[in-house]
Image (cartoon, rainbow, N blue to C red; front, side):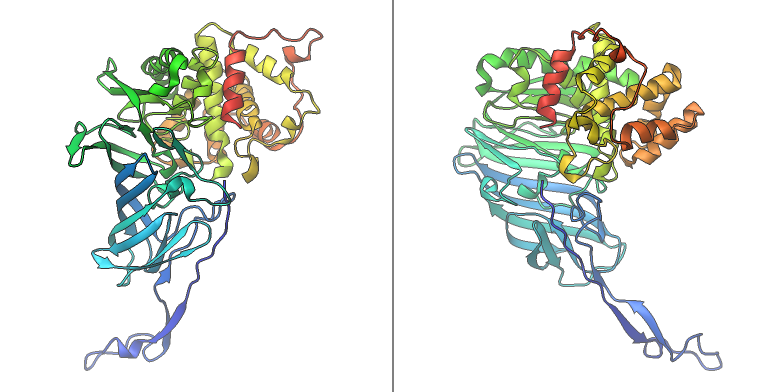
Length: 510
């Protein structure tokens, strides 16, 4: 993660009304005639959206509706060239605006006119249009660029993973900077068209559906086209490029399922398939708990052996690192990442401090899946999880409701986050609890939410004051004192699901 705060500057100018407005004979002069009136001149859009943890992420002054990302990629050299067209609406009068981006920019046009550019901060591309942009104006921003993403670093880090046969554009909380210019914050979701030209024989997997099959191009190349028509946060757009076996199917309801498996997985391949091929089944089960599945497609990508070491809930199609299959099939990580399609993707964080709304809920989905599979009830998993962390463990000093920017993905956000939800379930009862979850995903569908909003919803449905519960479990350091099997003289029995859940969380939170 990288954090660098830049500030936009604003200017106010004075103008005289008498030079702009003339009265007609016999009319009284307008109020304020001849006196200076303060009017706001067009200003630069803010260089960040003011996120508590990452204040320079995203940009102010415009709202994006759609990204058309058209790329050419060379696996042999990692050279990426592209043209991204951004459709947006100005939310203020703009003299300039920022995009989050790192590669070398060749040109930018705003509504057909060439714009000038400069860079600022760690990842800011400053665009100055040839003509002032007015509030409410529709913008077509065309950016042409090139670069080698794996060699483009911020603080010594790249969010782009180059592999032996291609690349993965998969990361959190940011990955867009390395492959398309954007307003990179979950508050500004948009739809996507992503097309990528690669040498024939190389596959490209991305979000959503394929509006048409891969298209042959000159020079022994093939263009892959993907489209998602659901609002998508920029970090949830992804690409997996390389050698993949692609398996397509439909759900009983007719929704497309696309699963892809890196050919480099070797002996890990069968375990990956035995896990990811159950995605449609798991999504159907989760739909019965969380509400209707929010997107137009589903599936998963088993990344290459030299790829990422984690999994990510990339929208419509999570991407999994090879470590999840080293001890055989693991449906718990599949349940986790697909629960994120509701908690994190459809309902996204309003600020990154609200990460518990993503990870605590996806982790608790694993506990519910354990119940469903007869491998340990949620209470048994809670008891064992609670007992596994001694009272003096540093684990209990991290606050899931406000872990800090450096610990957004700390294990406490996952495990203590899930424990919080189990305590909520015990406090309000199953009927209210399983009404709260789909109510949350329905009321905030395709939008954003905060912990405070979730607490208010839970209190409204349950009729209970839950402030002590949320304060204790999310915002107070130390191990809460609970009446549970974890306090008995004999330690709780390890649930059958624990090893897989523990293994998954070790990879997910590190």
